[in-house]
Length: 459
Image (cartoon, rainbow, N blue to C red; front, side, top):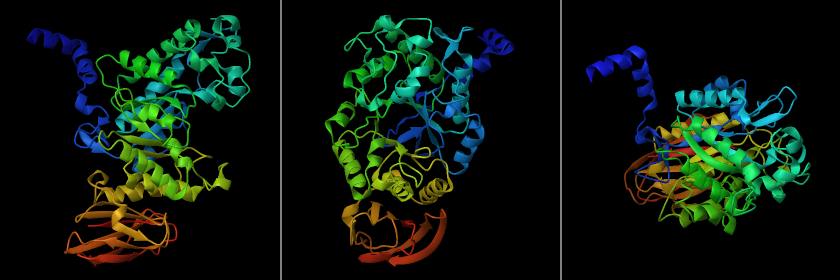
C-alpha cells in the first residue's frame, strides 16, 4: 500500500483522485433538517441571485460579474445552454464549408461551460442549468440553428421530420424538436443528437457539486417530453444524486399544468414557479402560498429563478415594473422560497443597484434571523389593505416584516411578554436604519416611514 501511495504521489494521480472524490454531503441538495430549503457542503443556504444575462457561461466578463454578485451576497445564477445570441459559441463544430457537424463538438463552447462551473464552484455560487430553451428553435433563431437541416451535414428535412421555418411564437409549441421522444413522434434521427448533447453536458456538469437541473425554460410543451428527459438525466448521472425540475409557462401555479411537477416528487426533486412573478400584488403571494400549502406534508425546495419587472421592460402596462420586482423578491423570501433571482434586463433588474440593495438587505436580516427558522405568519398581522405588509415569524422569538411602503400594521406579540428590539433596514439603500424597543405581551402598532419599503427584524 505504501509503495502504491508513493507511486501515485510521484505521478500526480493522488492529487487528481482526491480532487475528484466528493461526499454526498458536499452536494447541493434539499436540507436534511428542513427539506424546503437547500444545503451545500452540509450547511443550509438561502439562494439569492441577480445576473444580467441568462446564458451566463457565454459572457466574456463572467469572472468580474460573478465577483460582483458574490460581493452583493448573491449565491445562485441561472444558466441556459442557449447559443443564439451574437458572439455566442455554438455547441457543435462548424465545417470549412460553413455547416455544422452534429457528431463533433465545438470545444470553445464546452470550455466556456466548464469555466463557468469552475468559477461558480470556487465562489460557492449555485447554478440552475436550463437544458432546452424553446426560443432557440423557432422564428429567426431557427434560421441559424445547428439543428436546422439546412445548417448541418447530418440529415435532410425529410429524414428529420423538420421544416425550413417555424414562424410562430414558440409558446404555440408547433416545433417538432420538442416531440422527438419515443412516446410522442419517436424521431430517432433527431433524438440521438439531442441525447448526445445532454450526455456531453452531464460529462462536464457531474464533476461539480453546485448544479441543479431544469429541463426547459418556461415551456408550454407536453408532459411526456419532460418526463422522458427527467428519466434520461437520472439514468445518465451515474452514482451522483441530481436534482431536477421543469419550468412551465402557465402563470397560474394552481393550474393542472403545474401539477405535472408538483404531484411528482419522485421525478422532480424541486419546484420552479418563476412564472408566478407575472402576477402582481397579493395574488402573487397567495398563489405561491397555495403551492407551499399543497406540498406541506412532503416539502421540497421551491425556486424562482426569474423575477420579472423593471421600468424598461415590455409589461409596464400590467404593473410588471421595478417596484413589482422588488416586492416579489421580498414576498418570495418571507414566503418560503428556497431560491429567488432577479431576471436579466430589460425584463428584470439584473445585477443593478436596486437588486444589489435587495440582496444586501436580506443578508443583513439573515445575520440576525435565519429565514428557515421562520414560517409565513400573516395570521399575526393586521393591515388596512392587502399588499402593505408581509410577515414571517418564529412566534415569541423572532419576526421578519416586509413593508412595501409607508404603511402601518398591528403585530401580535402576545406569545412573549418580554422586551423586543426592532431593527429597520431601508430597501432603497440596503443599509441599517432606525432601532426601536418594543414591549411584548400585547398587540403592538408599527409604522414604516420608508417610501421605497423596509425590512424589519424583531427579536
